[in-house]
Image (cartoon, rainbow, N blue to C red; front, side, top):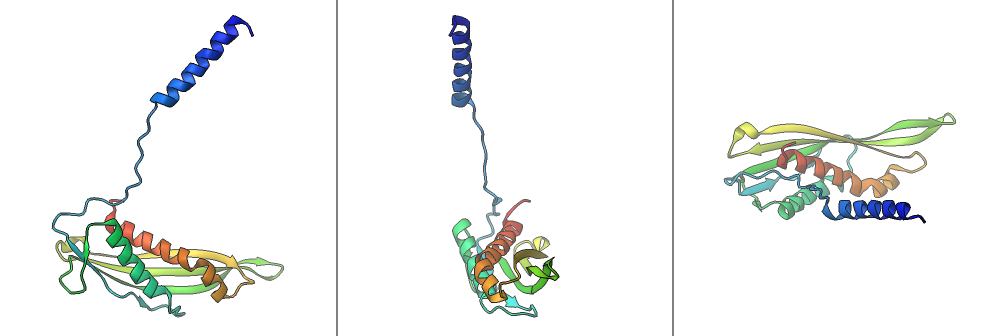
Length: 173
């Protein structure tokens, strides 16, 4: 290797090392906005299932998982009375299956449609009250029964709904 090639090689190597050592990137995944100081408590009412098809495991899991997420990711204290600063309720309004894909003149893919209706009341600042719907769809092989698909998708369904509810209540987004 000639001297000029060596110098270029060392300069390039030095540039790469300096870039790696001195470059910084600041990134945050915190999605919880500051909760006002006068908000201290929350209540999650039992979520009802008003869908045509009732999976008896979904709404109890949604209720408990949301409570645990709020307890673990905020400073709020759970209460079970009408004096809660944040009062959270809602219901599963749709839990249905449709055909989403056809192969060889038969259903190839089915889709589980899940919609949750959230009712949020801020008893300290009623201007913050809102209602919102969250809809998610989950495709599964049409060879599976709904029960089989639910065992595969159950945790994903509840996780997505809980994340959507939590983000809507506690984020600036």
